[in-house]
Image (cartoon, rainbow, N blue to C red):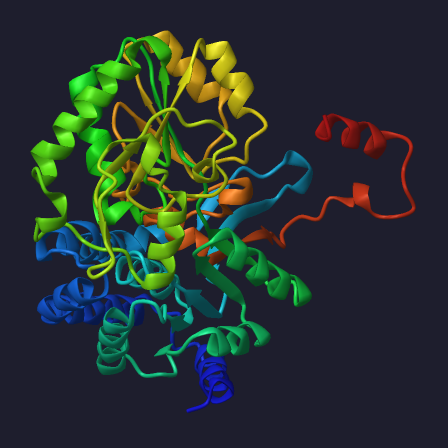
Amino acid sequence: MTIDQIIEHQRVFFRSGATLPLPFRQAALKRLYQAVEQHEEEIAAALTADLGKSAFEGFMCETGLVKTEISYMRKHLRRLSRERTVCTPLAQFASRSFTVPSPYGNVLIMSPWNYPFLLTIDPLADAIAAGNTAVVKPSAYSPATSAVIEKLIGQTFDPAHVAVVSGGRQENSALLEQRFDLVFFTGSQAVGREVLRHTAETLTPAVLELGGKSPCIVDATADLPLAARRIVFGKYLNCGQTCVAPDYVLCQREIKDALIAELKRQITAQYGPKPLENPDYGRIVNQKHFERLLGLLDSEKAVIGGQYSRETLQIAPTVLDGVTAGDPVMGQEIFGPILPILTFESYDALYTGLAPEPKPLALYLFSRDKTRIQEALRRLSFGGGCVNDVVIHLATSEMGFGGMGESGMGAYHGQAGFEAFSHRKSIVDKKLWIDLPMRYQPYQKSLYGKLLRLFLR
């Protein structure tokens, strides 16, 4: 089918009301969960083919999280779909006020290549739970995983309910020319702007999950061995190709050398003395991104790592010291296994320096000073983050995940995901047995006017 035909079939299917009953949604989520289980080995192999991910990492960071999200939706769907009664103002006596979630309709989900399975099926589960039909567009940069997604969805759903459109830029452009009821996009800021330009033309709501330069702050009170262990895990996971990876470290000047020593120790402990020979260490997705990263790797400032292989598209876990704000590595989101170390003198200087920067998708703070922690969380703007850890805030269905400003708009996961794909209607159910006359003309200046002033205070 052509893109036009797919969308028209989905519009007809949605308008029929078929996706609205909760038993239909539950059955669809159950089939999706079973399909993921049945294709786990294929998914793992595809992630290895596309990104060099080990089977363990693929399950931990993609398939397992997808199963958790689907399970959350299946467990909580009835609660999420309920009406919510709210207080009714006395002036609207007698009536009941409530809100009820309603699916947007036909939604488009555009996913990236760095976590190609997770960032496709996670939002799809939320969209299905909310009662939508969906067109899924996986990334052309992760062809093996995209092929598995297309097969899995094709075997599980009627295309009138969920369909996959494969391809590259031409297909992306063709989809964005269509009119959807909601567009959900995960990817770069540059493409996010393009998506928003298209959706603005038709006033289509959009959820944008983007990225940015997420800082990792380490102060003098931090537990440095533990901080280094967790930073190394989060930064070099998936070879740094993670939207919420620590982009750079900001540490207090007096602990810089000690922190670098701990980072070196942890890189060796986790990846071995020769990371490029570690079978569980992945690779950069393609030649284009590999060359971009080499352009950011200043070998003279590499105090750890710096080795790379053009043959395997691998770059060893690397730490750069002596970095300034004017260096190329600080001019863009790194999205690779290169970690610059910068320093700050005081928290006031830290706040002053970060304030004019674009709001990051994530922020991480390693400290034992509870007062400083609370102050930093209040004063700094960011999408989400962790205290004394990195990355793990997105691995829960109990909190929404999303950015703000240039790092995105909207959130999903769990209840936030259900609400992202739903419009909550506000309804007043007015009773018939009484009709207060004060709102009708001719307006009264005596008793009714006094009563109105009592009600509207």
